[in-house]
Amino acid sequence: MKKRLLQISLLICTGVSITGCATILSLSTADEQTKCGSDCNVPRIFSGTAVDICGLAADNLGIFALVDLPLSLVGDTLMFPYTYYTQSKYGDISVKTPCASKSGT
Image (cartoon, rainbow, N blue to C red; front, side, top):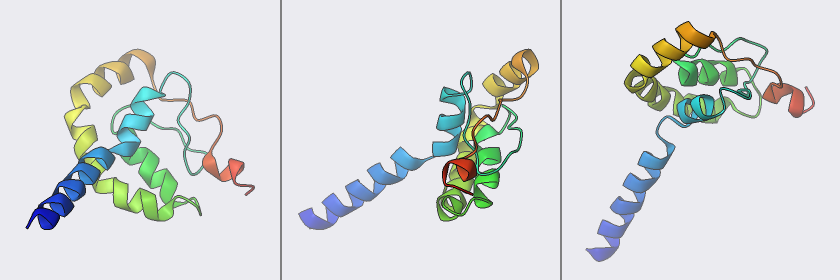
């Protein structure tokens, strides 16, 4: 019983820690750059979802982006008031070095 409870606790902690990873990444590095799977502009509104969609095109990020997409959608929805304000004030996030370029493609 204790082993099962530990397994469930670890699963919940893992799920919470990866929730909206692209959302957190894009909002925390928005002033520098957001690395994406292709050369596409990333709006601040629903930026995590946009990064995941761009990441689906990247060879090395496809499966992670697919798993993270619904989680980022939830995170982006929760962050909508903040991102709406920053989008209107600063505009899109600049994508300078896409992941596809770093992997040699």
